[in-house]
Length: 128
Picture (tube, helix red, strand yellow):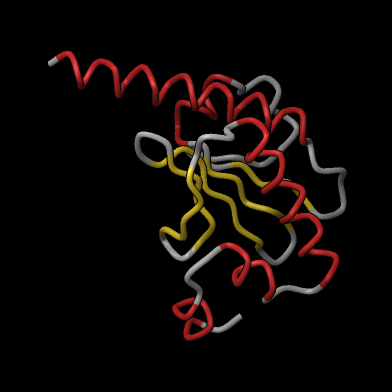
């Protein structure tokens, strides 16, 4: 996918459609998992990748050359660091290799955690 193609993407359907069928299937599985864990979240494209928003950015995900990148913010990585130990990760991201089964239950738990976190932050901001 070229930079120009990425710039032209304005919704998650268009983003997913740019990839081979097997990658599209994985992206859809991740998308549906996020939707089920955060049904009130809105879909968007932020930073040129699929994003779910609920009281701010909730999680992002993206297709890379050999993996699905999942970006639940540093707090999401820290909270689930033991469950994520089998995967390559950084401060706010984790890589789920194409060659392994997508850990949809874990993704769901991380999203649910991020929903509660964002709702708590939002409630705190409203009190101030």
